[in-house]
Length: 137
Image (cartoon, rainbow, N blue to C red; front, side):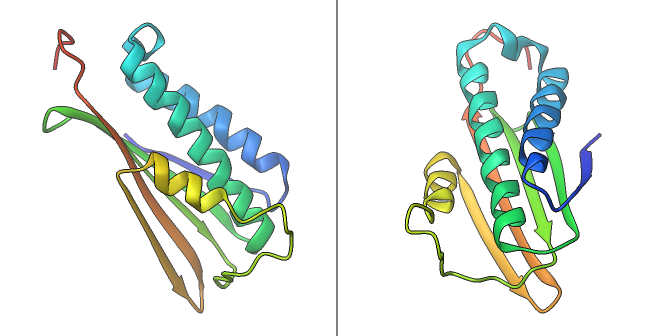
């Protein structure tokens, strides 16, 4: 069962999403609290979540939503995050200290897709790790 969040267009939404996603993923994979590979994956998922929602709040418009789904097939654990906002894609950044969020997301992700349209922006991210040896499938 996936997690779906409707978020306020406010900076604190990144924190709310990050906490909710971590709790959701840890609930799906309880062994992530003690298994190092999964713990690292959950940390990356949390960071990517915060970046996606911060970008939606900073560059987008309402509504802001996040869909999260876990998978444990094909010898790996994976999470798909789908962040949507009502803003049009803008590749510029008025802040000279900004603009690195999607680079970070890309570095941590197995896949990153951005869809731009008149109704908003959708960013789909897949993070995954090979199944840790010795864990039951």
